[in-house]
Image: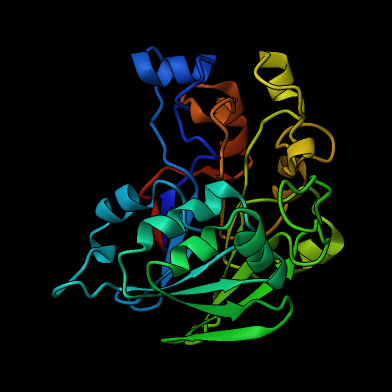
Length: 297
């Protein structure tokens, strides 16, 4: 199984267009070593010919152009087979509208996410006006074959984040995906949004070979300290990396071959190659994703 990181930043990308925090200034003026990043999404394949997207970021067009394996072959035939959504956030779904030129699109989403995309943001209803959309219901705990020897099992990721749209139902608002190469039995877990690493969520990490996990903020009060927002990381539905009970403390002991932070907010110091926080993450055996990172699992 191949896993390609199409985008590694949180919403807004890095730098964020309306932000002059120290990180964004550094990437613009080159004063510290760091790389620009697009908004979070990955692509997965077992044969490097048929690809499945996990989330469709607003940067999806540039991400496809940056990855030759996702470009069209003959005419308008593309290797993109389906999009699997973790939630209904704009940063993870707006790219669906940029895929409207396709004759059809298969979208895997929970009933809660589908409701929000239809009745809340109207993204799915708008998309359906341009192309045929096939909705595949995602039921947490159910194994689903995608074909080509790739399967997934979605699992609920509890969140207290207030819902901007939809009913705010607790079930199915946010899910993670455990993707399995059926030929090898090797699994990768995609978990870009997690507020708490509950026992049920941690159980999904057992025996996985690769974990791509939420690295949004270093500190819980990061945005408040910088004066750019009044919300904590947990308020926004994300477990911070640092501090007691943070993801670094919980994940560093796990025997997983590849542990990778993505969905990294523009304010997070791990984006800076020379930051002490970056070195702390790497010493703990966790990698910081960059756009274009590709692994064979």
